[in-house]
Image (cartoon, rainbow, N blue to C red; front, side):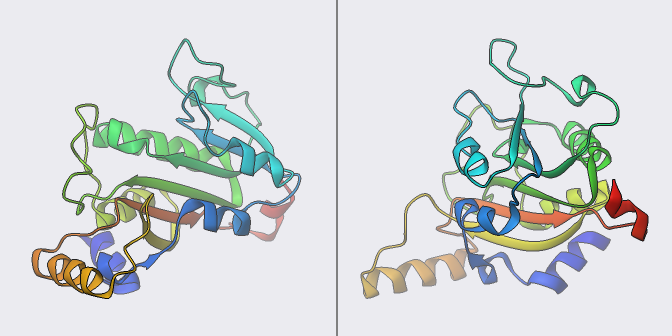
Length: 207
């Protein structure tokens, strides 16, 4: 409950979150020469192109034994290797709560102090987004926030987004807004959280 209350106090209700997608935020987080780990990248690696275009070194991880990935788990990452940025795009909903926590804790331990993390999940408040038999755990925003905080991260940004923009029709927009407020639903189908690992001491930035 501690982290849930902190999330609401910091970001308000999920309907108060700004509408901003990963593609809008990523350029602000990526730097040339940084090391990026894409957790649960999937066969198509949808963010590889934008990451490589930034000048960052791209590494990918997925449990699919048939896929072409750098790592299949954090156990495959050589000792002494750390990353400047990690992302888990639409991955945690396919895990149990315990597995999701272990994954994010492992991410925290392999990200350098000062490093950033981005996580996206289906929006639990969307009317149809959870209709997928492979989805195990819904992640309401305050629970996603709590997961990251429990793993050790500090959360800097919570946003919502949709693959398709909201209609420009004023009447339809008003109807959507009223329905969302009345039934605590959301037209945005995904939630994004961005956080960081704190710098423990000035020397940590030299790693």
